[in-house]
Structure formats: structure tokens, C-alpha cells
Amino acid sequence: MTIPDIPSGDLQVVARVVQLLRLLGEAGTIDLVSAAQELSVGKSTAHRYLASMENHGLLQRRDRNRYEFGPLLAEMGTMALSRLGVVNLARPVMEEISLRVRHTVVLTIWNGRQAVVAQVHEDSSRTAHVSIRTGSVLRAGTAQDCIFRAFQDQSFYRFRHEAAEAGQESDGLEEVRRTGVAIRSSANEGVRAVAVPIRDAADRVVAALAVVGVTQLVPEEDDSDVVMTLREGAQAIHQALSASLERAGE
Image (cartoon, rainbow, N blue to C red; front, side, top):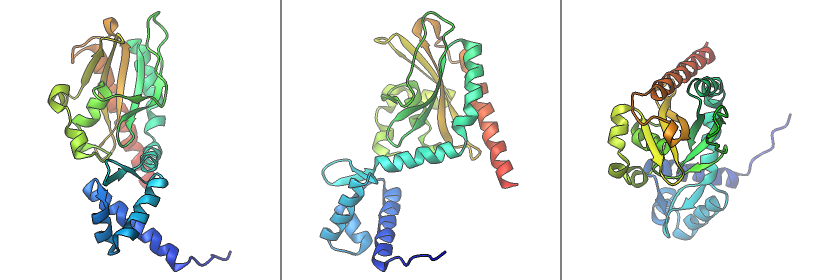
């Protein structure tokens, strides 16, 4: 098979894009001045790179002058997480939890900006139960969102500093860190969610495992049977991830 020659100009473009992505990874944001300095080019050339990366989803604007990770990078991060096996390994555990507590069980990941529902095992054993659509983006302050933000320094994901710090006091993130569980209720929707972190073999938080149900039927104590069952489930997934990694290394 003949491998076609790649024009040197294309290689330079790729190298510069990688440079900017590495800078973005270190700083969390990037602007025109920092991009030009990193590439040792003029501002007009740097602007073309930033604009093209934005058009292709690698970057998105945080404000008028600064860029952050774009939706394509978030999608790639989600794909990488799927390859770790979290989604597949969680499926039977979620089914077992749902059977035990008789509530809907949800697996949530972080898309770079928000918590996103990756998998649902819906309970239908009760007349009143909660339905959640896979792919739903959860608002800030939900139990799953609090899990990701509370353990941001132990996360598989990269967090923006100001986004991670916003609302920590009002959301009680210190309590979540202390107990290892987030319990949040929505009076308007009549729903309560209880969430715990799932950790990979390196002890990084890769997902949140949650029970979601009608407020009156889900206990709000942090030592309830629901919490204990979730913790057992999260530990089972953690052990499965560790075993999978060991097998891969054999």
C-alpha cells in the first residue's frame, strides 16, 4: 500500500492546532493574544486558527474575547469514557438497584459543561414513577451536578474554575464531599434524586449513579437503604472497571 505524501503545510496546521489545544488544556481558556504568542504568529493568523477551530466545534466562545473547549471535544471525551466500559458495566448493576429500591436509576456523565444522562433503567413497578430521557442535560444544582462539582479535584473531567466554584455554598458541596452523597429535591416537579460518584481504577470520578423518584417515596436521609444500595452499586462498578483494566494489561 502506498502512503500518500502529506503536504508540509497541512502538517504545520495540525501541529499548531495541537499547540492551541494543549495551551487551552493548561489555561482553561484561550484568547487572541495568547494564541498569537503560543504560535509565534501575528494576530490575524491566530484569529484564522481560532475561527476555524470554532467552526469545527473544537472551540466555543465563552465571551467576546475568550474561547473554551467546544462541543466536539466534549463528544470525544464522552466517547473516551464509553470506551472505558462504564456504560456497559453499569447496566446490570442499575437493573439490580432498580429492582431493590423500586425507583428509576440513572447513570450520568459530564459533557464538559453540564451533567448529561447516559443511561436509564426505568422502574414501572409503582403507579407513580419518574421517566427520564437518555441524553437529557441536567440543570445546575441537581444531585448529579453536585456530585461532579463537589469532586472536581478528583475528576476524570476537566473543569473551568469559575464554573466549578459557582454556587458551592448554596448547593452545599462541602456536605456532599463529607458524606459522599448528594440528595436534592424539586418542589415544582415533585421529584427527589439521590446520587453518588462512580470512580475508575485510578480513583477518578467518571460518572454519577442516581436514584430518581417521587419526592414522597424517596428518603432524604444520607444513611437510608437507597443510599446504601447506591454505594454498593457504585463500588461494584468501580471493581468491575478495575478488573477490566487488569485484564486489558495481561
